[in-house]
Image (cartoon, rainbow, N blue to C red):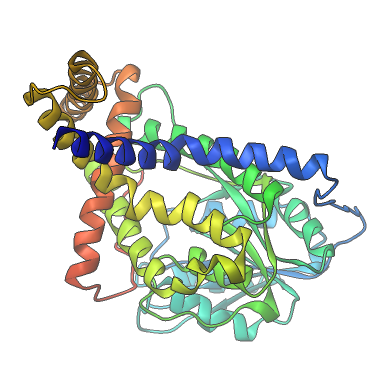
Length: 403
């Protein structure tokens, strides 16, 4: 019996290790092998390639940041005659629509569409794209700031006809006094950036960050209005159609972290629920015989992070406890299981301490990693519960951001 439990523990440990560390190692090795075989993807950048683009900004009740977003957009380094700014302000009641309307009279390349009812970001995108004439459409959030060269860095990839979408980088702007959740999120996105670079070199990025991503306008298809992760679903459907999705770290969107752990938890649970929704709708990508490397990347980098690793963690702890309590001889000495159990207990204990201190406005950097790792996986489990209980709307509940 003990040997059977040991095997289960090893399998669960391997799945967690592969999800968070192993895939990065395997992807790095595969990239090296491809390079040795001369199968690298050549990026042919032409500084003169400046196609017409439309920057779409869904903006529901964004008066607190819409002015800075507008002038950040207008200051981007791209020919004025080749870029249009489209703000979708449907349902706004705080003066956002009126403010944008007053700006349209001053800038001929600023346009606004809207309505009286709030229908959500994805419906705003579905409504915006049919009105766009440019070959490239770029989506960005109202509460983010783009770097000056973002548009040029993105569009240069579209010279390659095999590229269907380009994902920018999401950066979290934190300071030393920020909440542990915000600091942990910053570390998480730095690691994500590393993995996305490997994904691009191997074949394709599996999912874009909604804060900044671009697609070929003809490839955009309306997405179900209850979709939670529109950026993820849109980009992967384009990849499934045979186009590559490129990661471009030189085009980035900066945003502030969530105001509190409670706000961040709401956001993470909703993202996880959207992840399970996406897994159900993108089930065809599990066919590795049809989609090859894309299926491998999708399962390894995304599906396992939502649907496998979070559930393995409590299983590992429980199985480890059973092995500690059993005196019979196993494959490994009893001392190994005792040390592993103590290490897990200490790790989760630090996470709990980090959460407790954070609620008292006491921040210790040493606790960021155990806290955020545990926090992220707990949110994934709660996100699954929310998905199973039914999702009623694709409209996001706005989360307060740090000032």
